[in-house]
Image (cartoon, rainbow, N blue to C red; front, side, top):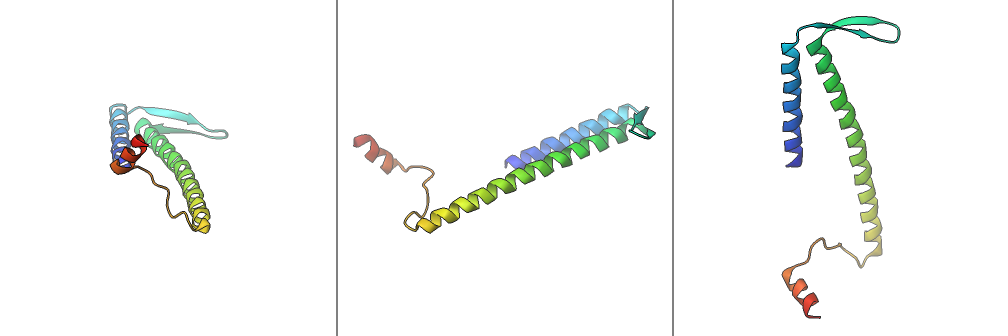
Length: 102
């Protein structure tokens, strides 16, 4: 669900950038290290936005894969122990009642 909202927000930001660029039809000059070019502002905004999105997506994917590999390694080491099958993430009401009585 979080990823759905993130995609919606990114899409809205991209549309906002395109609308901003559509209102500004002026030509901008970009100076590179060895060259110079003149481009329309909406094209520059779209390229910069998409390249930033792709770069952040690539870095986030790397981080997520790193965490998944660490989780898989931890699960394998837990399964080697044998007697521990799973780590409980939440307690039931019966377990809470036993803890408070003790």
